[in-house]
Amino acid sequence: MPQKKSPTTDKTNLHPRNKHRERYDFRKLRAALPELEPFVVANDYGTVSVDFFNPEAVRMLNKALLKAYYGIEYWDIPADYLCPPVPGRADYIHYAADLLAESNNGIIPTGKKVHVLDIGVGANCVYPIIGAHEYGWSFVGAEIDRNAITAAQKIILANALLKDQVEIRLQTDHEDIVNGVIMEDEFFDLVICNPPFHKSLNEAKEGNIRKNRNLSGGKRSESNLNFGGQFNELWCKGGEERFIRFMIIQSSYFRDSCFWYTTIVSKKEHLRNIYEELEHRKATIVKTIPMSQGSKTSRIVAWTFLSPEEQQKWAKDRWS
Image (cartoon, rainbow, N blue to C red; front, top):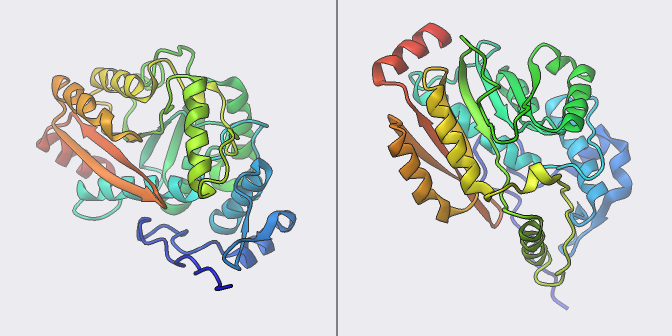
């Protein structure tokens, strides 16, 4: 029987600065986290991997990645909470850094002076981990789930990298996004957001079935939320499009408080209404940045309300 062709070792669709462009180095990962060892198995290509249908294997892989590449000594999440793929999260941070560089003569602003708001930071706190390690940015993480806040704060307190870099704030109103989080006379260079994709639990399960079929080559059709996820992490009333429209509306109330507002948009068909809302709210610049990981494609939509003169002044005053 002919041997199956091994997949490419270079994930060339990931950002050039992404540490995870090549296939996972399991020798390095097992050395960083010996507890990963029982979950490493041979795959159909004759190489080693983990079973991505096993939530515990995915959690251990994340722990190993965050320790080996980002210096995180402690990381854990409660059962059934979202365990996001680290390479995709890293891509968002690197593309966001490029966005800031475009407004700063091609130089990425680094250090604590760069203030980032993460909408829906989650129990995993992954975006602040990557942003603090790669660029030294400081973060405010907004979250509506008190259990997620407790888990995120435990991660922050246990890691020296994060202690003075990341603050978590409770969002008390489920209908609010930036309202109630951005304080008076507070300024953010960047807002990031990975909104809930789905409109209901059933829609989330159906989406997971499709993902399982793609991952298994059509062999698995059951719903197994291997990456976890609570209600507010996976679905919300009106789904992704409604959430982002609310985010745009509220961002217009804080037009001078942030340079770049950004969000992941997973579904291409939502872009038209998003662009219309941004035009209605008089955003001065709108950018769409494509992203992909494997067969999954998505994009970042970024907007600002600052005039060209205000943008220049912002960069000079805050990043110089």
